[in-house]
Image (cartoon, rainbow, N blue to C red):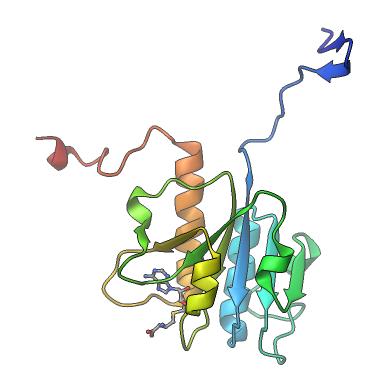
Amino acid sequence: MDTTSRSNKGRVSSRVSDRSERGYAIVAMDSPADPVNVGHTLRAAMCFDTRLVVLANADPSIDVRRLSTDPGRTWRHTPVLSVIDIFASLPYDCTPIAIELTEDAEDLVDFQHPERACYIFGPERGSLSEETMKRCDRVLKIPVSLPLNLAATVNVVLYDRMLKMRRPDLQAGGNNTRTKR
Ligand SMILES: C[S@@+](CC[C@H](N)C(=O)[O-])C[C@H]1O[C@@H](n2cnc3c(N)ncnc32)[C@H](O)[C@@H]1O
């Protein structure tokens, strides 16, 4: 079957992409200090098909090629950048999202993920700076009473994205029959 057509503006393809999902996710870590967390994060990035990992001001002792918690050696398959300014590495039309447990942050439960998103995570012993959060288009929290471990947060956010991208029909509470009575 001919899947292309010609117009006077040139060749136009009507072929449909065979990618399973639209858009992409980038994971950015701001000032990570613990190689265990960086390894778990790289592993999550590979498992959830993240297109890029950005490490800003990581502890100099962290060697992404040798992390016991990243046995798949993610750097071989997913680009890993070391940068000073996360925002300088943002691709065109990608939404920066600060992941931080603040009172005003949007709740992950009701969050609809942008097609092109860069999720920015803070350091283990601290939080994202006010300046970083202001430079982000959105601030997002996992609604729990105490902060989660950094790498656990990465896994939860990426899983939530995968679920909502694959099952846009799922609404918050939609599967809980008790809320329907
Ligand atoms: C372990 S937390 C930092 C510790 C925390 N600031 C504290 O008060 O103990 C490291 C990072 O994980 C992310 N994080 C942890 N729990 C989170 C949550 N419930 N919602 C959103 N981000 C969270 C944030 O990016 C945070 O900067």
